[in-house]
Every structure is written in C-alpha cells, then in structure tokens.
Length: 108
Image 1 (cartoon, rainbow, N blue to C red):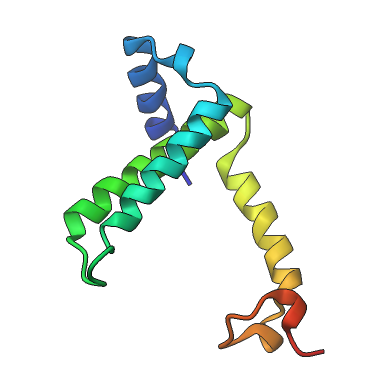
Image 2 (image 1 turned 90 degrees about the horizontal axis):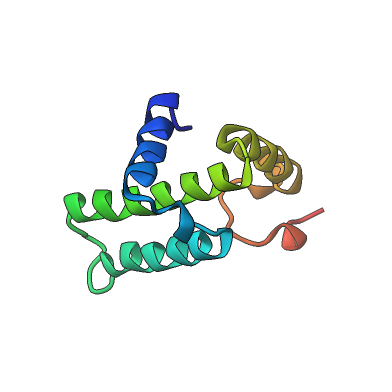
C-alpha cells in the first residue's frame, strides 16, 4: 500500500516539525474525517471535480490514514487484506454482482 520510502518521508516530516505530540489516535481519526469532508467538497456541486484538487485532498486523507496506522503499529497492507477477506465472504460475487444492497439483503 505505502512503500517504505513514503512511510519514512511521512515520519521524517512529523519528526522535523515535532508534530508527533499532536498525533494521538483520536486527533488523527478526526483529521481523516475532516480531510474526507474536504474531498467530498470537491464534488459538492458537480460530479466533474477538478482532478488536481481531488488528488490533493485524497493525498491528505491517505496521509492521515497512514499516520494513524503507523501510530497504532498496524500494517496497512495486512489490515486491508484482512478486511478484503471478510468482504469477500460477506459479499459472494455470484450474489453481490451488480447490486449495492447490504450483505444481509442479498438473495440466499
């Protein structure tokens, strides 16, 4: 998901600015939500958002997600793979293909 170079660059940025003191899990989770709202704002009035702005806001969301995973000692690749396995079980392709209903509403 994130290369070791990206993670080290994030850690260095935080270290050089002494921002770790502000990066509690709670604060990072809040920041994810705030940045996600800014990403959504790109699409507020039109489905055709400016690609550069979307990329910048998405980068902010991803940055805070990676910082939170790092702070909690979680491997982003591992937790995504684990969640994918759960989703595959909850949403079998033959039942979920082409529908957006929740797993408990899928046909038997």
